[in-house]
Length: 330
Image 1 (spheres, rainbow, N blue to C red):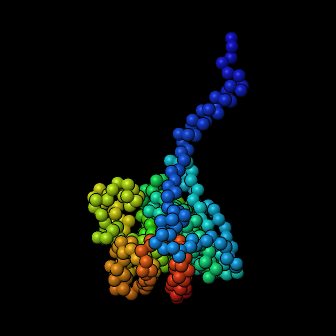
Image 2: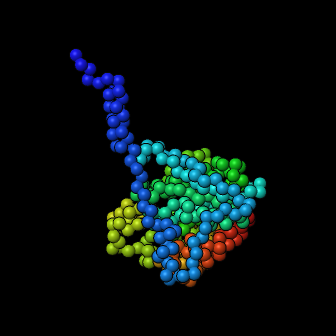
Image 3: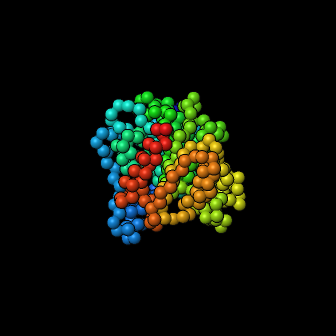
């Protein structure tokens, strides 16, 4: 009687079955690369011919460690999933304030490399900077990114001694969608429902100061809310539906509703597009009543991602540095 499979045939059968299983269980994470420095440069070069791309260039006196895993997400639709940070630190030993830095891209695109030029410049001024990767909307909807970033903060505190971080001086910054996330993460310090369960749960995710660079603080403010928003709009995609469909989610993701008497100081750095500042004035009024420090700087130019380019990157870095030193060293 003929054997249906010899040893080689069995191995081939096993290999093919494994490939089918892997394709079903290890899907590739969707990736929208449309928001990047090169594209933004092309969009804005005609209107602002003087602009130059801020470079990824490590300054003297700064060390870097890239692609460090801060948490591993288990059993996602894409398999086990590592999330990473890039860290830039002053070479001189000591304990320094730390800044968690969150990139923009409409919660759908972009990556942590967008923050690196600012991170390097701030590290040269004596701040440990941590550029964070988080799950974008094509991979996971709100509030996944919030849980990711809270985990990154806990990881920073868990590794504070290793990286020369003062665990009592941790701030967060973000640009555009990253600014919205920075505000929400910073103003929900101590809110259990916003913590998630991703790593280093024995450490605090408290934030001591916030920097919001052109990020919305209230999705329901008149200049931010558009009741005819298309289903593929970035906010609708990330929040899982329109305001009419998911009003409670739109409110939950609006940082202004989480502000209170114990909130930390906030720096706002704005472009000339007022729609990115929706709700900001009202929040500042609330903070003043509570006696909490706020600071505002605005570049009166109609360019949203100004922080990616010269001549705006250096003054932006200086505003951030001066604000952090003033408010974290009290």
